[in-house]
Image 1 (tube, rainbow, N blue to C red):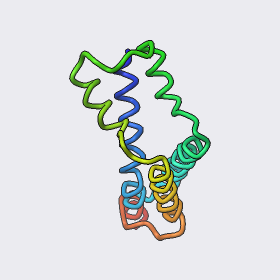
Image 2: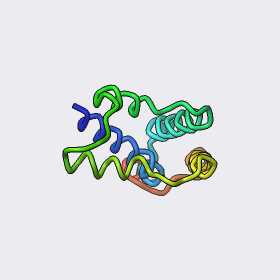
Image 3: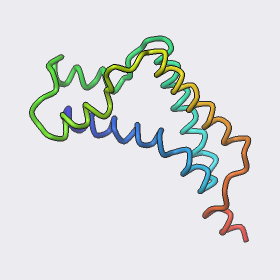
Length: 119
């Protein structure tokens, strides 16, 4: 079960990282709102020092043991939980990324699928 939560956690991270260019291309306002809201929520959690709910769930499922065992778990752990990065750097990167995504509501999105349907 912990692997399922870890995979979901990884997919959420991919959504945050790749959601911006996807939102610009497809010009789907609700997608952009969900993406920006999620990033804002994660940034608030980081600034307040509150762990991600998925991280808490993973720890409960594995009963605070170290990751171990499966290949998927060990590699996703290395990708999701980067070590050696200062908290300030993580906060600045998160805030910058959130500002970038929020700016997508100001910029005109690229021509994509929704634009093609309207013409």
